[in-house]
Image (cartoon, rainbow, N blue to C red; front, side, top):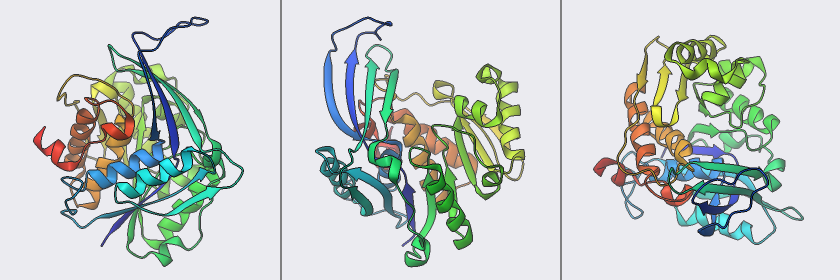
Length: 316
C-alpha cells in the first residue's frame, strides 16, 4: 500500500477563546480554555489520514497509509500526542520520546466573532528532530514526503535529499518561512506557501501580494527558483497556483458554513492536497478538493478536532 510520510512537529496547543484580542498591556478574561494536540506536522499527518478515509472505521478508497517522524518530550504532553496519532490509525513508530526535554507547546488565542487566531510557539523537543538515514530504503511503501519547518532545517533538507534519491514525491510547506538554500527548490515537486511565506522566500514586501498581479508574479518567481508546482494560499480569498506545464489559475475559497476557528485550516489544506495528488488527481482538481476540505475545517473549533474526514467533505 502506498504511504504518505509526514516529517514535522507535534505540539500541545493551549487554546483560549476571547470576545476580542487584547491590546498591548491589557488583560482580558477568556471565555474558555482547552489543551489539545497540534503542531503543523501532526495536523498535516492527521489530515492525510482522515482525508483518505470516509470515516474513522472505513478503509482508504485508494489504500493509502500514513506515518510520521518527529519528537515528543518526556512530559505530560508526550503520551497525549502519541495517542492522538495512533488513535487516528497513523504509524507512529517514527516518533521519539526525548528524555529531559519538554514537548512542543503552542499558546493560541482565538477571537470568537471572527475565528481569527494569534499563535506563540515553543519548539521544545521538535527542535532536536533528526532524520533517520535509509528510511525510504527500509520503508519502500513510502511514496510521498510531506514536510514543514517547525523542526530543524538541516533535518528537513536531509529528508528531501533522500526522498529525491529514492524517487519519493515531495510536498513542502516551508512554514514558518526562512531563507532556504537555492538548490532545494529544484527538489520540490509541490511548494505550498501562504502570502507571508511567499514574500519571505522571494525577499519581497508582503504588500506586493495584496493584488492579483503581485500574487502571480511572486508565484512565478518561486517556480523560476526551481519548484515545479507552486501554490500560494490566500486564506478567505482562496489560492493561486501554477503547474509545471504552465497552467495557472486563481481558486476562490469555498464557504460551507460559519467560520468558527481558522486554526489548522492551512494544515488541512496541505494534507488534503497531498492525498489528492497521491490518488492521481490533476493539480486543478487537487487544489479544489483541498480548498473544500479547509472550508469544512474552519466551521469547527480546534486544529485536530476541526480536520474533517473525507466523507464530511464530500457531503458538505
